[in-house]
Image 1 (cartoon, rainbow, N blue to C red):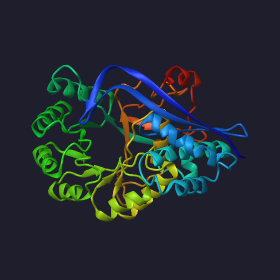
Image 2: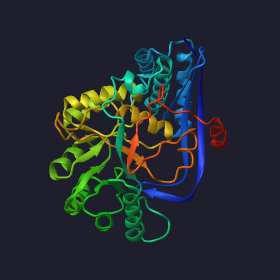
Image 3: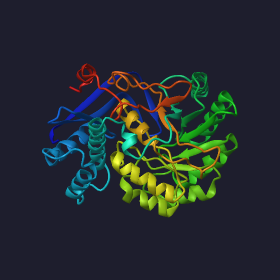
Length: 377
């Protein structure tokens, strides 16, 4: 079997109303999907996390190295592309592009052998995954002390056992909103906060000490990703678990995070950190360091499916026991017209639980009419 074509699809959709996290406003959602065709009629699908037009350019740069190659040689192709661009792309957009390619190759591999990707990764430890609801962004109008608790309560009503709140808008405002959300969801629901690296260590520690009384499941990206010493300072100062890593890449980047003990929980994005091939290696490293792994997920149904295939094989956070603590799926609840529309059958939750797709490859089928509908002009 040989690769005959590599295509990129840049997708774009306007939102009904803008929303913001600590560093930017969104009024559109974009995605960059990779399609790889073979001479045996099999097609694989992947997705790149990152700026869509730039990741598309990266994939198009890599495409000639794939034509004529055997798509089943996933590690060989990963190493070839990485080596070819090592001088220019050990992190960032190059690795994001490589991630989408790698996911598409695993989709082909699973289809070739007629099994889901998780079986080829070693076999599923679980067939369903507890999800947490990511939402609780800022809006242009209204009082966040009112609309955020209401939104959080709506996720609990859907059956989610955990929600994640966006912070990074000033320590006092963050503390007030965290208190209001905790009161709205009650004490039995896990509550995590995510600053999207809006603070330095001093402010992050101040916020963490202020909201610690609200039983915070983890404090995500409290400081910029480059500030490893800042992560270590925040981690040493707070009893709250510290999470991060969505802006880190490959086993080489995560090696430094793991060795430095800067995080309690790492969050590689499968569509950014190197794809399924690399994220499985990162997960194995994390297990050796006894550091938890919960993937960052922010994309379409392809990203969700790839993350679920990986989550199926990740070990529990805790040593073997009668009550293992399993990793969770990040389930984005913000408006995203493209997310489920490009799937022939959407990936949905039932009372906060998502089943791992069990069809060949990623276990999904792509709706080409939706690709055409959302194609960026």
